[in-house]
Structure formats: C-alpha cells, structure tokens
Length: 413
Image (cartoon, rainbow, N blue to C red; front, side, top):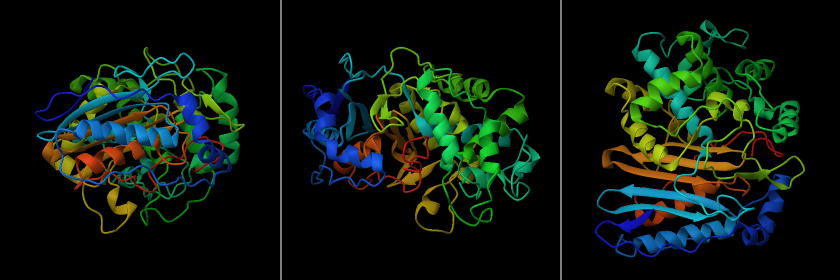
C-alpha cells in the first residue's frame, strides 16, 4: 500500500479504525436510517490549501475522521493525480467478527459502477453495427409500456420513465426475506425484474426528464444478450474485462465471493446491522452485480473516462451534453460527471463505491467501503473528503439521484 505526495517519502500508515466502537458512536445516525428519515451531521472538513509533503497525512486524517463519524468499518481509498499525489491506503477491517484488517486485495461488490460496464458493452455493439442507440427497446424486449417510444439512448441516460422495481413493496419484502438464506437464494431473472416494472404505468413520457432507476440498465443487459446470443457475463469477460486485463472482476452467477473478500454490512429486514456479503446480487443484474478489486477499478476508472475500449466518436456521443441543469445534465450514457470527475458510484447491500477519473489529467479516484448503513453514501463521503484536500478545484460531490435504489428496509434511500 502507498500513500505519498509526489516526490515525498511515504509516512507511517494511519491507525486502523475498528467498527465495534464506531457503530456505538454513530448510534444516533444509524437509528435514523431504519426510520428512513435520518440526516447526517456535518462531516469532518479541512481547509483546502496547496498540496504539499504533508498531504498524505492530511488525507489519512480526513478519511479516519469521516469513518469515525459515519461508522464505516473498512475502506480502501485511492487517489492518483500525476504531479500531485499517488495515494492508496487501507483503513479499518474487512471482517468485523475476526478483526481481519482491510487489504488492497479484497474483492467487493461495486454496485452501480456495473452500469458503466453494461453501457460500454452496448456501445461496443453499436460500433459493431448490431444495434443503434435510436433503436426502441421493443425491438429486443416486449411487453413494456411505450416500449416502441423508449430508445436505448433513453435507457442509458436514465430518461425512460419506467417504474423502478425496487420501489415495489412486495418485491422488496420478498428479496429481504430470501437474500439472507444463502448465496443461491433470491435468484431472480432479468425478465422477472422487468415484469415488475412493466406492470406499472410510466412515471413520465419517455425522454421528457431524468429519473435514475435500475431497470434501465437491466434492460440494456438483456439487449446485449439478445443481440449476441450469449450471457452478459460471458460478453463482459471477453470484450471488456479481458482487453483491460481486469482479471479479478467477475459478473457473478450467485452470491458467492472470491477470496479474499471484504465482508459487507447493511441493515436487514428487522433494522439490525447484518453481514450481507453473500447476498445474491441477481436482483441488481446488469445494473449492479459485478464484483471487483481496487486494482481493477483503478484501471477501469481511467479506461472508462478516456474511452479506451471505444472509438473517439463513440466516446464523444456517450459524454454528449444535454440542454438541462442538475442531475439530468450530469448524467450521460451510463456515466456521470461530478466536479470534473467522470465515472460512477455504487451502492448495494453491504458495499458502496466511487470509481472516477479526470481523463485529461490521467487522474483516478477509487473508494471502496464495506457498508451502506450510514445515512449518506459512505464511499461518496470519503471521496469528497480526499478530493477537497488534494484537488480543491475538482471536488467530488454525490450526484443526487444516482445513489441507490436497492432492496432495503427503506426503499429508495
């Protein structure tokens, strides 16, 4: 592990942050989450100033302070800005029961960062002239309300108007009951997920506004499978993972995780914090199922931002501006921009992530945390803390509406 400003010696590693004390200390925050109405107190901040030899130590302090306040058991934080800082550090524990410390080698669930892979797969098929972003989803998947008017571009841009299956109380209750039963439980199919959304009317006319829902990415994954005749995981492995040598990344067939893995902590159906490490991510599918590591995500962050796997024209189309403000303008085709950083965040029971880059500076930001319990996005809070210090002109801010819609006791949190 490394943590140094460019041209300086690496300082001693920061103190480990234990979750046992953190959860007790953050009790007021966590109790509010179960009620679905908690508001986080002010997070630790530091006055931005020019990066210097003490930058790694200040980054350590910002991370540990944020972890302590939010009750984050463990985290991996990496920030690479050529000429300013090369920082990668582990904090806290990967396993709260054994006390095993976090390491850079841990496998974690990356949640909605998966959308960037699914979107890239679709764009590669566009380049292969097997489909077009203007194609209606009805060409590939039937039974959707206004499916002849919802284009693939609208799905990738989160502008379809489709109902979010994670907002369906019966679906959420069923998943919360099944997922803790083992890694093969909750093996819902993409078609079943789409059926839940298709049974409800549209929230708005297709293309008329932005609303972040996972079913959009699930449908794009189905398109990849229909066009190629192959499972999405197989296509990603051959056409996305392999070219970039993302050897530790996998689109899983169950809730099993490769070793070593960081245990992930969430709130269960009864509101108690529980280990969700082996919960089957099938319900997230093409929107959030991928498992990966810090090293692979650092590689992916820059490849995604620079469009390494795409033609320049395709990447330009992906990042094309929209005539709006707010989250609608920040979100493009399965990617968003925040403070000059391009990429995506993720949240799935037990884990949160931020995977971003500033392509023109070859800068990368990767934060992986093994909890989604805090009332704010854990990895996002850590990303904001370190960029506030290291890149004050490019501070990461959580994109409103691109956090999470997952099975939880408080749907839509």
